[in-house]
Image 1 (cartoon, helix red, strand yellow):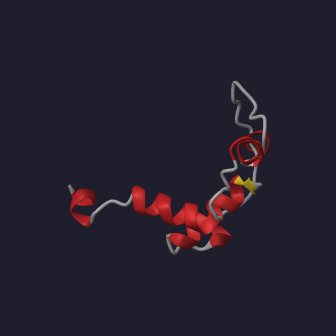
Image 2: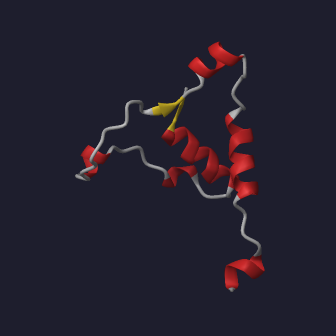
Length: 79
């Protein structure tokens, strides 16, 4: 299982942002009202792996893929 904090820290590292900027919290701790409570506090593929045999990617590979997929070219960012 990977927590959302783990994912955020992996993405921060991939983007050369200090992981110390990621602080674990909850909606309740921040006083945010959300109309639903997430069932799980993290991301997991246990059931998917059991049913299909597909293994999850390593966290670093997920971060690399996300950064690559959503990268903005400098010309796009300015204009």
